[in-house]
Image 1 (cartoon, rainbow, N blue to C red):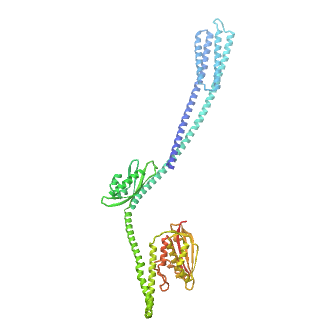
Image 2 (image 1 turned 90 degrees about the vertical axis):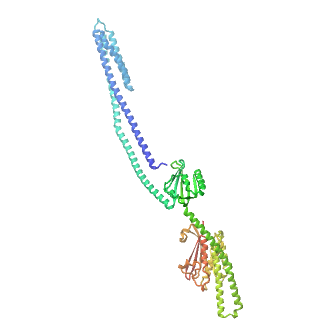
Image 3 (image 1 turned 60 degrees about the vertical axis):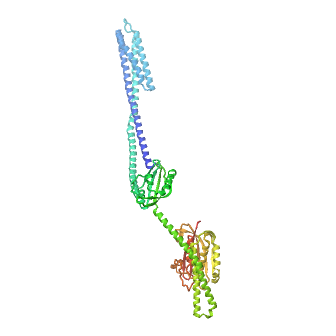
Amino acid sequence: MPTPSSRYLRTAFVAGLFVILCIGGYTYQHISELSKASEVVKDNYSLRSELELVISNLKDAEIGHRGFLLTHDSLFLTPYEESLQKISNNLEKLDTLIVPNSEQVDKLKDLNSDIQKRFENFSKSFARVNDSEVLTKDLLYLLHEGEIQMDTIRSDISEMLDLEQRLLVQNQEISQGKIGLTPLLFYGLLIVTLVILLLAYIKMTTDLKALKESNTELEIFEKLTKQSEIVSNTSTWVWYIEEDEFEFSDNLYRLLGEEPQSFEPTLINFYKFVHEEDLTNLGHRVNLMMKEGELPFTSFRVVHKDGTIKHLKAYSKLMDETDGEKKIFGVTVDATNEVENYRIIEQRNQELERTNKELSAFNYVASHDLQEPLRKIQTFMSRLEAKEKDRISESGQIYIQRMKSASARMRMLIEDLLQYSRTNTSEKEYLKTNMNLLLEHAKTELIDSIEEKRAKIICDDLPTMEVISFQIQQLFINIISNSLKYSKEDVPPIIEITHEEVLSRNVKQIQNSLYKYHHKITFKDNGIGFEQPYAEKIFLLFNRLHGKSEYSGTGIGLAICKKIVENHKGVIIAEGEPNKGATFIIYLPFLK
């Protein structure tokens, strides 16, 4: 597609050429007119000469006529007859010289008629002449009439000369006017041409400067591209389809373990470096590229001369035919580190899988093998207390109570650990669930504690969401249980549960989320609260803000809550104030 600069230069060239053609055309026209004017002057001069010859020849005829009348010598008739022939020739030539002007043509007719009358007069006078007679009265009359006719002829010629002079002056005035305008017009056209050429020159100079700057930028870009290829272990290549020729970047040679441009860039030479096990597949892909104009991501190995094996990955696509030439542009990347990292990830995944199996085995042991002897200990402790209570000393009974308390705490810890492990390893199946039903199930699980504490739970209507049902129910149980546990003495707990939809960018903790909207579920109680600096610590595993003697628990409940929220790609935040209560805010993402 032509650029504005090239269009401008083309326009300037066409305009300049047009002006030059105009100058040439006008010059030709002006020269033609000058030539015509010269012809007019020449014809005018010839016409004046012929008219003067007519008078001269008439005079010669008169001399011959008078000589004959006086001498009766036929010798005087010779100049008369010659003059008659000359006058005839003069009239014919005058007829060709006169321009198509009706007035001049009419005058020529009058002149021709008067000359004929004059010669008729000559003929009549010749008829009256006798050798023995003197001039008669009739002859004298004819001579007198002849003089009058000569005056008439002179008058006719004078009028024709005057008219021709006027025509000559008019033509000269017209020519002078055109000649006067010609330099001005030529000068104006010349100025316009110079301005166009000057503008074109300025534009060409500007474009040349911009081209130099672009070339400098391209050189810098080329250097940066070469450096970036080296740093990123990438390379480029071009296949010119019509010429069936390849062009390799310097770094493609380096990826093959060779010096830049050390061999001719052809497929045959490139295939020499490809691993023999990958050669067939790569050749098949390249053949498809030549047919379809595109090479999808293709991985293969190359072998350096020193035996080093590198993993490469190539991709290519047919470029736009902006210059009318078909070519495929390709990129080849060193994927050795990627392959090695993938192998490391595979190994770690295998190790993680083994760890998960071991964790599953631990869960089984914790849920069966560890709890079984614990149950037996608790059973034997109960029997010992029931049957031997009277024979055990007071200090022994205290020991038994401590043993029972420790075993109960041990059982609770095992169950919480199992719950936390289940949160980590269970299958994550998201289903559309009515959150109000999960909340009711959680309240049913805690009905005894709710009634014992005389707690009041106030809840907004919760939406239907895609969640892992049993985890969200456990989340509700743990948060409500936490509020019941850390309530004030002799003050019935009040737990308020609210819901709203929020725009993610308006909330600091989730403003960088990939989701535009979030559900905000808030649990607020009137319990003992906590110091705000501890807001992050309460979600850590086995972390407790209060002693075992003050409040029961293992320090795992809120850690389970955080894990459940993270499983749902959400965020949980704790806010507290001593003796005023605690607030837990949960943000769960959704698409609106």
